[in-house]
Length: 178
Image (spheres, rainbow, N blue to C red):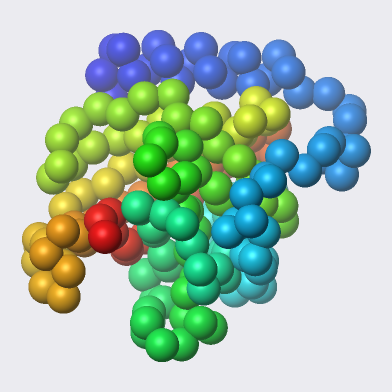
């Protein structure tokens, strides 16, 4: 981890911890107002996480308005089967922002920066209420571009979430493009 990334991550984590309160998340307003994300469902699928109480969930969204999507490794995506449209992360098309299910709630994430290039990069995001930070490490898949869609790139990687209840990590596969 570079010194700049470490400084940004430590600063964001300090800010997140300073903003922690006893207020229930259920008391917070729903910040997701986009109609395409409102159709997402939280799916109860077992995932591997580090030893903590923070949980990374899966969204089922058969109509995402996203450029980048990251799914569980075991997910067998089929374009004509909406039940297979399962995602850990969906970006907000045209921005560095995105959406994830963390601790059983869909969270809006704000992009804090990206390092790297098209073949390997790290994205830093913070939850809009500043309770969680997310680091996404992506690597270009061995196969390179999606053979069906020449303007799409396939990736694998790791998503790590840090929050008031600890941290969790999951491996993913996915892509970016149209």
